[in-house]
Amino acid sequence: MIASCVRGMVLGILAIAALAGCTSQRIALSEKFGYAKREQLVDRVEDARDGQEAAKQQFESALKEFLAVTEVSGAELRELEAQYDKLNREYERSESRAKDVHNRIRKVQQVADALFQEWRHELDQYSNADLRRHSERQLEDTRRQYDRLIEVMETAEARMTPVLAAFKDQVLFLKHNLNARAISSLQQNADRIQSDVGSLVRDMEASIAEANAFIRQMQADK
Image 1 (cartoon, rainbow, N blue to C red):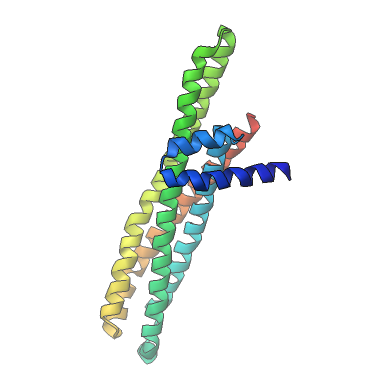
Image 2 (image 1 turned 135 degrees about the vertical axis):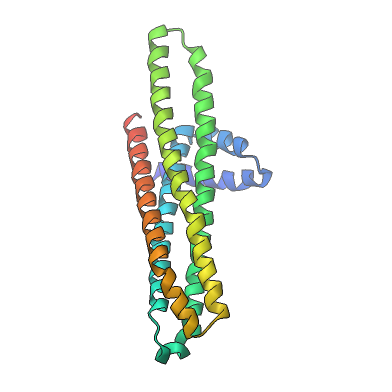
C-alpha cells in the first residue's frame, strides 16, 4: 500500500515535470523520490512489452478482417462498403498501436541510457578494486542483455512499417473500387499479406519473450 502511494505520488510529480519536456530531468526527479533508474527501466520495458503484445493482437485482428473481405462473393457486394469501414477501422487501430510501440521503445532507451551512464560514472567511486571489477562485469552483462532486447524490439518494430503500408494500400484500393474486380485483386494479395503478418507476429513474440527475460534478470539481480 505504501509503495503504491509512493508510486502514485511520483507519477503525479512526473505529470508536472512533463510540462518542462526534459526527459533527463524527469528521470532524475523520479529517482529523488525513490523511483530508482533500475525500476524505471524495468517499468519502461514492461510498458514496451505490453505495447507490443497489444500491437500483435491488433495486427492479427486486422488480418482477420482483411481475409474476410477477400471472401466476399458477387451476391454480397452490397455489404462491401460496410466491410470497408470495418477494415479501415482495423487499419487505423493498427497504425495507432504501431505508433504506441515506437514511443514505448524510445522511453526504454531514454531510461536505459541514463542508467548505464550513471553506472559507468559511479565505477570510479569504488575504493575496493575487487568490488569495482565485479560491478563492472555486472554492468557489461546487463548492457549486453539490454542490447539484445533493443535489437529484437526494433526488429519487430521495423516489421510494422511494410505491413502497415500493405494494409493501407489495400484499404485505399477497396475504398476506390467497391466492385467485384477489387475483390478479385485483393484475393491475389491475401497470401502475401498473411505471410507478412505471420512474420511480424513471430518477431513480436520473440521481442516479448526477450523483454520478459530481461525483466526477470533485472528483478533477480536486485
